[in-house]
Structures are given as C-alpha cells and as structure tokens.
Length: 445
Ligand code: UDX
Image (cartoon, rainbow, N blue to C red; front, side):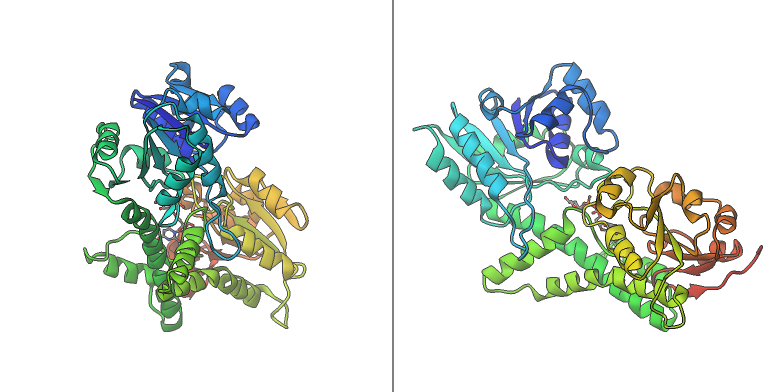
C-alpha cells in the first residue's frame, strides 16, 4: 500500500519504518527541514533500539522517503497517518494545534479518496474535529474517511511493540475504511478490534490512565509497607499472581514520567471535567505521582542533612540514571529533573551519570552544581550517597564492593528497587529503598 505519515517523532518514525519494512511504500512528512535533512542523511534523530537499522534498510531500498512537502506525501498515498505532537496546555487540556494544522495541510493536498488516520493521542471528539477541518479546506468533491488508530508503543521497545502489539484498535465510521485498515495490519498476528471513533479515542486514554493508576496504587501500597515493615515486592507479587490483577505495572518507585502518562492522565481529568463528570480517582493518581520524588528527597535530606536536617551543604550525591526510564535518552518528565532540583536547592553537589541521556540532561539540568560522569563508579567517587533513579540494565550487575569503595559514605537510595537488600547490605552499604524499609550495612566492610 502507499502510505503517508505526517510527523517524524517517536510515533511517526516507528510507524513509518515498520510499515515500510512490511513492504509498503511510505513517505514521511515533517515540517522541520533540519529533521528531514537528518533523516535523508541516514541518521536516526532519536535513541530507540532497532530503529536505526529499520530506517536505514528501508530508506536504502527505496520504500521509505522523507520530505517537508505534505502534497508530495499525500498525493500518491491511500492512507495518511497523523502522528504529530499533542502536548498539554497548563490546564491539562490537550493542545491540538499541530493536529489541526496537519489536517488542514492534508485537506489542501487531497487529490482523491484517502483514509486519514489519527495516531496521535487525542481527546475524545478529535476524530470529528479532524473531519470538520478537512471538510472546510478540501477541494470540492474530494472524498475521505477519518479513522482513529491509537498507538500503544513504549519508548525503548517501540519497534517490538509495533510489530507485536497486544491488540490493534481501529475506530472507523465506514466499513470501507475499516477493511482497508484491517488489510494494512494483516501481516501482524494479533487481535484487531474495530470500534466507533470515540470509543477508540477513549480506549487509548483509559488504557494509559489505568496503567498510571496501577503505578500510583502500588506506590501508595509501598508507603503502607514502609510504615508497617512489609515488603512491597512481596506484596506486588502476591497481588499480581491474581490473574484479574496481573503482574505488570506494579513496580513501586519514583512514579511515572515520560511523554505520555503524565499528560494523558491530565488530559483525561480535563476532558472529564469538561463533560461534567469529574474523574476523581485520576486526580488522586496524579497527586500520588507528584509526591513520589519529594518523598525520596526528604528521606535523603533527613539521612544526610546537617543537624537542622535541612541542608545538604558540602554533600555530594551521585545520581544514577537520568532518562525517564531505561533504553531511551528521553528526558521528558524524567524524575531525575525534579530530584536534582530539590537536592541542589538543599545545597548538594550532584555527580550525574546516564548511559545515553547525558547530553539531553545537560540541556535541562545545566552545569551549575552538576558534574556529568563517565560511569556509575565515576559518579560515586567521593559521593555521600548513590541514588538510583532509572533502572538501566547495566546497573543490575554493578560491582557493589567497587561502588562502596568509590563512595565517601557507603549509603544507597534505590528509587527503583533494583537491588535486593541482602546483596547491598552484604557489600557494606546502607540500603534505603522503596516500600521495603532501611537495611544497615551487613558484611564485608
Ligand atoms: C507508555 C505506554 O506504556 C504506552 O502504551 C503508550 O502508548 C505511551 O506511554 P512509555 O511512556 O514509553 O509508554 O513508558 P512505560 O514503559 O509505559 O513507562 C511509563 C512510566 O511509568 C515510566 O516512568 C516508568 O518508570 C513508570 N513505571 C512503569 C513505574 O513506575 N512502574 C511500573 O510498574 C511501570
């Protein structure tokens, strides 16, 4: 099939590269000349495992093109995906200006029947909005259908999630469009759910909000565990063994970040208020998420601060992991930003390390009070505590004895419960984690 993808961010690039890899002819349109130049030169502008190989192969084999021209992309295409950004406004509302502008450009480029597919995460009713914008701007008589086909890809495993999704949701108002979309997804072996457009739009938000709820729920359980002496890992395992609950998204920690969950939760809260049926549970989910980092910062300051318990003056803290989660250099809503801010405010010096996100982190955290380090051991050198913020795989097998030797004080705060208390304690390090109490250094000092 001939496909056009508008937008070359995470969703657009992964969608374009996977569909071209499945043998379709894909033209990816982006309004940024710089972005298109980067892609044309064969470079992959984002860190995402497997994506550079897919882009490179399909570009070289001529199935994947890049352009700044919407008419060039739309004219030969039967299906046009809208994959542009939908950021949050300060009141939680979703900013649809990029969707509107993409719809207008598509309308002006229509030269025959097209299926216009919203893949960007958009509030319920946006399918209708896109239809109205296109109707207003299309050349007379040009026919089209609007479809909602939300993405569920996770950064860090976006290619895998696109090739092996749990389900594909197609919200369509015409049988013809639904059938062509089914045909497009035929090579993927997974359930396809066809619904009306509004239901598809809500499925996306409700799924992300439910996952965010699971995370805030287990974090609230972790607070209970900390106060009562229970172990949140054991509790999560016990809960997750119930098939109705399931084991996923029950990792207690510093809460959810990234480009989706925080903004999707806010957007659903906003939509619910607008519709006059406030989604109060979600308000609590967001509130629990907002206190995760301050809660850890407070523990760090209490343990390391001066007599008043407030100041980290003359203290150095190693921050390990800066990206919002492993396998990405994405710093959007990364917990490291808030934590570093609070520790710097308390007077600490930060020694920061991340396997891939350091350059992005530097543009946000700056250089004032922060030293960027080459490895976890380097970051720990002379630090009064090591604080794990992101559970990168390379941290799992760290030599904890070597870490202890690098630290000025053998103290660890594990914001993602990467380690078992026994192993940290046995390495002679005092271990503070989430929902599992505090463990004094045990053996091999
Ligand atoms: C998410 C959704 O999973 C995906 O379906 C959607 O389309 C885009 O948003 P992503 O933001 O890439 O994907 O990351 P995800 O792996 O879902 O994690 C989101 C956040 O939740 C991260 O900050 C992660 O650290 C946190 N998280 C996740 C937890 O704190 N505990 C968990 O158990 C799982």
